[in-house]
Length: 217
Image 1 (tube, rainbow, N blue to C red):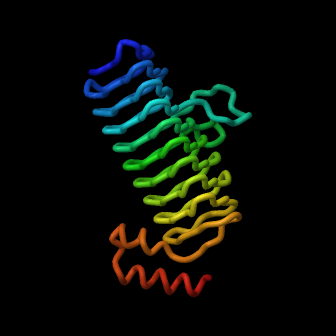
Image 2 (tube, helix red, strand yellow; image 1 turned 120 degrees about the vertical axis):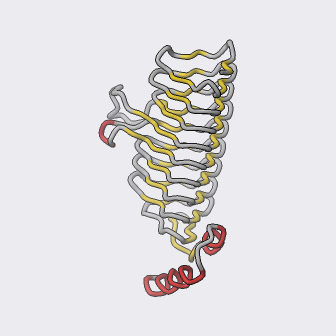
């Protein structure tokens, strides 16, 4: 186990012997850090369970209290899967009692610098969250969605699987799966054909999606 001597680790934390904790990091109460996960310098992790092979870059905040005026200090959690990358100054808040007490992150996601994931959000697998994206509370993000820089998602909204959201989009409604959506306020612009191709979606399925799109929109 590689824990830098300047790190502060709560006595209740459980850290896998293969994990690495960097200089001046703070590992708070009720934290579980899985195999080969790396926690960078000056990072704060608390009330969180992190799986294997995650990389938390310096200065991010994971599992910290929600920015919700109703939050009264109740014990809630953040759960993160495997092989996620969390870049500098990212904030991922734990849940609230009113939202089920859990913020959940899948596996294989990239959270670029200065993005924010609020309380009770559910983020699927393979999601890319570009710089300065803001997710309000209770937002659900489907697998392999890409959220362009400085986009914002209103609370309780859903972003569908394999959606592509344009940079700077302000989203007050749900975002359709498999589609490109952009603008302020954001409107659908067509199918996310590039994302579908990258994901290996069969040609016949893409054709069916095109037919559905023409019918609905």
